[in-house]
Structures are given as structure tokens and as C-alpha cells.
Length: 196
Image (cartoon, rainbow, N blue to C red):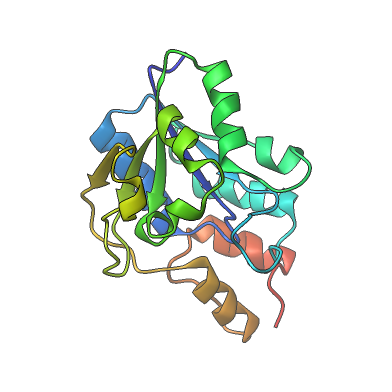
């Protein structure tokens, strides 16, 4: 039973070195016992459905985090029908790990719109947050959350890569190697996940 549990959610379409860097920074700096990598089934703030099917995104996450024994790829949001609300995941993790310190790890881009997350005030009561700086985006939370959020800013060299940019490169017919773990890049090529 972990005393300190990290949570890293996302579409992971595909998972990249920035995701691994954020997870590693959180694990090291917060002293986490375990970090759950949780691919979303249907992300609420994303305009389009993921290009890669859920089972492939799970497989890519397992490859991306294979060298991180403290990371557990968790399929709960993919199994759950409908929109993957973070509050539902947090409630489940509270029931499973009631005594654990729970920390939601996210990028600065997500922090900027955290006030749009469902039941965010309740979520702030269930988990702390840790943010990794990305592309010079502010690590200050929305003003409306100032009174309820507990936030740690992680210190790590920024990894300027995004899943959107990697998909665009791959769909143009280029091999998107930079920013991807090599095992994930091989998997994408073998499975033809992002065709041009």
C-alpha cells in the first residue's frame, strides 16, 4: 500500500519523453512510492477523439514507462464508459488508498485550465497537485483556485515536446523519433498508428 501515490493522467496519444520526465521528476522530488499512469478513455477537454485506439495507447504507455519500476499503467479510465472525469478517478483512488498522500501530476498547460475541470473544488480536497513547467507557461494556478489548491512546482529541465506535434510530424510521413522513447517509436512504426 503506497504511502505517497502520484497520478499522471492524459490521452497519451502518443506518450512521449515529456510524460516520462514529469513522472520521474515527481517520483524523485516528492518521494513517491508509486505513480499511476492513467490513459483517458474520452478526455473531456479535448476536441477530437484520440487517433490511436485505447489498447494501443495502453501498450505505448507500458513501453514508455518500462524502465520505471515505480510506475503502474492503470486502465481504469479506458475501462470506464463515457467521459474520463478526473474527479471520478480521484474518488476511486481515495477508496483504494485512503491513507495515501495523493498527488496529481500535470503540465503547466493543464494547470492553466484547471478551473475548467469537473468538481475541481472537491478534487482539490482529495489530491495535491504537482506541476512541471512546459514551454514557458506560467506555473501559477487560476486565481479562482488560490484558496483551495495545494501545489508543488517541480524542478526539472523542460522537455519541449507535445503529442500533438509528434502526431503531426508522423502524419506528414516523417518518422517522429525526437521526443519519443525508442520503444514507443518502434511500436508506432510497426503498428502504423499515425498514417500519413
